Length: 483
Image (cartoon, rainbow, N blue to C red; front, top):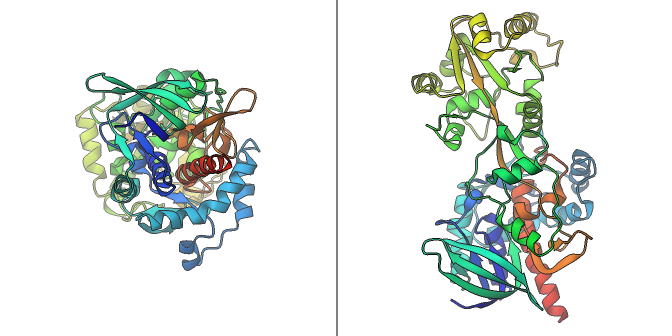
């Protein structure tokens, strides 16, 4: 292993491997450092990336205008997003899909999320296959060095570039390396409780991380140590409701795959808060994860309420909201078995009673019975005079036993902590670039958002992983050529 590089990339997820791929194509001597035993990180779970006017969209007859996307994102962020960066990202998005295909990444199609734009270019086999079947073998063949079980520490500015220590996680041995350029791709700070408590404006204890577990803010802390601006908007990429077992018998990511997790969190059934009051149009939430997460975080507790008839219907017949292409069946065949398992194991999120009054008492939700009585009246006439939910989603809650499923808010990543410019250079508190230091993916995505990730334009965060990675290497090339 060398001690001098043109580029050191810290973090072996989707953005890290995209940067390594571009660096390899440009002929840079490159080292990729990953603190985990395996590569991919949260990027392994990415469904696909955003693009506009791609060949895949054209072949599918999908016509989405770049200016529509730019305006939507600016509006969604209340103009807190950086319009220059969004403009460049949108312009490069179609080319980034083609670039991935040229490097062996396979796509299965283009879809929309809920009521949003059809911009989501889905990977075959998620990000896992994009990274491990395509990008990682490619960069290895091109001579990029990859060091796993290696933690990067003590980033220090030199006359040109940086030095840093690489610590072997297994035996704690240390090597110091220098690099003309350092790219931070460590995935944000969702798994750092201290940072979450200080950064998030709501109650982060209700946010359940469903990711690789390695996003502890390493890149942010290194950048701050050399003068980077601490840039917090409180943005977490919430994907809405998440059943969570506080007894830790079943992890959150496994519960996400249960039929029960989908029935409770993806279908627009009745939701109530800690007092038993209905507080939102549930359809508007499950079709837009940002709405779902924000509305839930404004409550102290949130419960999905089901009766036995609805559970029987969801299991043997059908549920009302079509979830294609992500869930292809029209019913939940495992729902009743999973409910039994949750009850047998006494998982923390489930409560079952024979009467609604008993349920209200157990939940300490005094208004629950009256809320359900009113909701059933709305269902009987087929008009939601409270929140205007479509009649077909007004499923009455009448036949006992009755069930309450407490929901937390699931999250995939954070999207702030550092500020970058159009070159993905990290900025100091005066808005000046820290030369040769770049942040990509979640480490550098704060410029894309206000306080909320907008799923109306699906795939934008993962797409930014690719765009920001290639953009950082392009910026390094431009600096190199100027010299």
